[in-house]
Length: 201
Figure 1 (tube, rainbow, N blue to C red):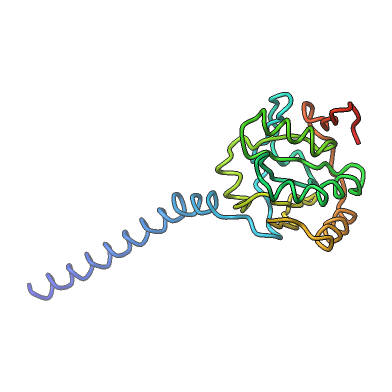
Figure 2: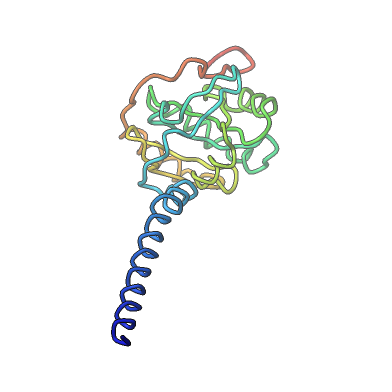
């Protein structure tokens, strides 16, 4: 009788351990892993989530970041002194980038100040804001402005730098830009903004 009871208890303990292990595996697969993928930061060389949305500051149209491949992303705020110091580098990138590679000036602030700044300081760029600012800045690793990033035609983040760019940084980005192939057309509603004079560089 005692041996039967001990055998049953061992079997019950083993079955309980198997069930707990299976439950833990399901929790990791169904809850923790998707949450980790959603909240992790994209590293250079990794694919950017295509469903990150951009909103045109000029028209309010929305398009997935996946539609802007390749893309040069310029994250800014109109009140950021470092962004102003970075303008010569960004303007050089805008002027010397290959045809067909869009530059997106991504304002991390309210629509009107961001649109005014982009129109005045970064003509020729597509003026946009993130559809979900917190998710975009977290996933893309944007912890400060200015931040400059390059996404290639396959949707991978291939270059990222926070802070004021040096001349060497600009040369590196331009070299990478010359090696990426345009993948399509810019979505409707995201035409490059014109300068105050009406010209689009």
